[in-house]
Length: 58
Picture 1 (cartoon, one colour):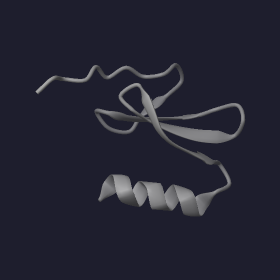
Picture 2 (cartoon, rainbow, N blue to C red; picture 1 turned 60 degrees about the vertical axis):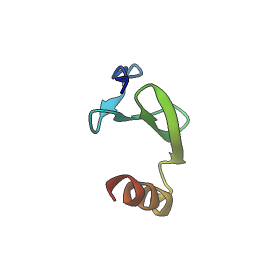
Picture 3 (cartoon, rainbow, N blue to C red; picture 1 turned 180 degrees about the horizontal axis):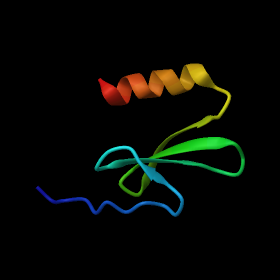
Picture 4 (tube, helix red, strand yellow; picture 1 turned 90 degrees about the vertical axis):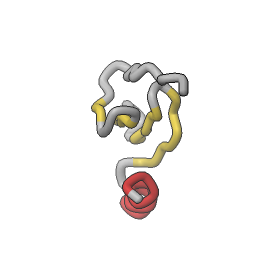
């Protein structure tokens, strides 16, 4: 299996080996798998945040 490089966008916080998150200036949270954006939600949207975290943790 080919390994993925753990590249992080500038200012991102690592959540796990391949998952990171960054809060952007437009008040959006963006989640990355390695260097690819996989999900985004506004900072005030708690229900969407909970749904995404539920998928990632499960």
